[in-house]
Length: 193
Image (tube, rainbow, N blue to C red; front, side, top):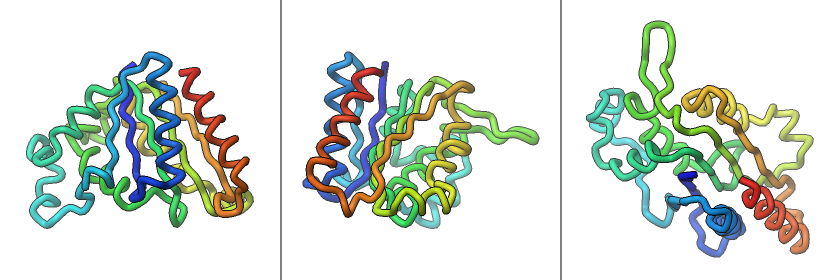
């Protein structure tokens, strides 16, 4: 399977980077073709300027400057996102990636009364994320980041697109052996893809 792996953390020495590598190695060992896009490492420009915003809803014109990201997304059969959850959502750079790359003519088309999904080749999405918050608070808040992925992003993919949510809560209180155990859980999950 062709998998697009998106990573969003600014530090190469982060636990998030260790998670990304666990995912990448497990997927490659399972025989998948993995395209890694590390948004911070490549200096992805998340913010739209006024001119880009004006073109953002214009099919074709909205691909200028992000052609390589668009091509990788269109080739992907699965999408894996690895990021820390900050303020109950994805990092701003990842949100900006969705704003810039998942545009009309790329991820969807506006039809009469409905949105037509265009990424129907994507049959599976996985999120690997960490939370500083305790589990009870995430439940109380309604898992806002999960809702965005399950009800919004996944809607633009294959009709039966599966969403895997692999998460670690209470990140700031975890002992090294707990962090190692979660890395093992992540490896095992993606070995089975």
